[in-house]
Image (tube, rainbow, N blue to C red):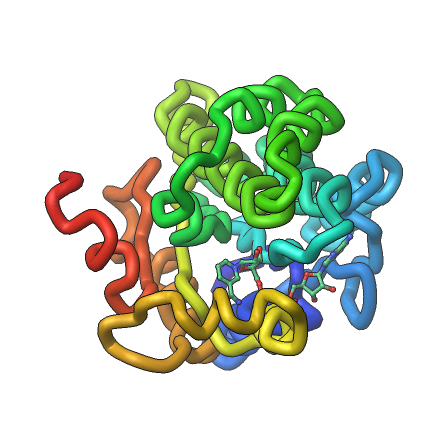
Length: 258
Ligand code: NAI
């Protein structure tokens, strides 16, 4: 049985992933801003370094894997938080946990991306580049230059940035060469408190009119099953992959983009 760190463990898909791992007999170290083994605010450098340190202490220095699910949706006015939590809350934690992930010899990491990365037209690449360079203010400024598209662009840019970071990093000697498998799970619209909040906001029409060929919204418990699978031996030969689970939306928009 393994030891897994799960961020965003208090709600939605992070919670569903943690429940699935616990039910299988694994040890889970939940990290969240509330109701978690490690309570930390991943939007601040102090919160992130506390999360890294306290998780490593609870894990005893070795992790069999991690799930990075803490994140915000495209809420207007929350652009700075989106950048901090969705990008730095993933990259900083994984860099801090890298030695513990390497210590286990065969570890697996699932980072939550989003199908918005490939279905949001016009996301400025300069915002993604700024996020990857660690200049979060500049990234937000670039993403919000066209004011009306601010929140969706910031959100999509944050998820493109972490996806790009995973794909670049997954193949680096310090990661793949240390037996760490980094992959991305990119959900579409999944029924969670995050989606409920969007359905209760001015984004409601946009969310409901987004095409989902299979219909409806996805189920968080099913995403938990995907996470468990991507942490299992079935993923031994998998690195830098992006697994899309979105009811067909992504294929609907770009069937020939392969
Ligand atoms: P959720 O809102 O149910 O759960 C997110 C968790 O992140 C919460 O427990 C929350 O407390 C935690 N969190 C937020 N800010 C934090 C902070 N500053 N410090 C520590 N923890 C913090 O969301 P959901 O839907 O389960 O989302 C999980 C991931 O999947 C997120 O990264 C989200 O962006 C992504 N996603 C969600 C989709 C959806 O339709 N629900 C679609 C595509 C991606």
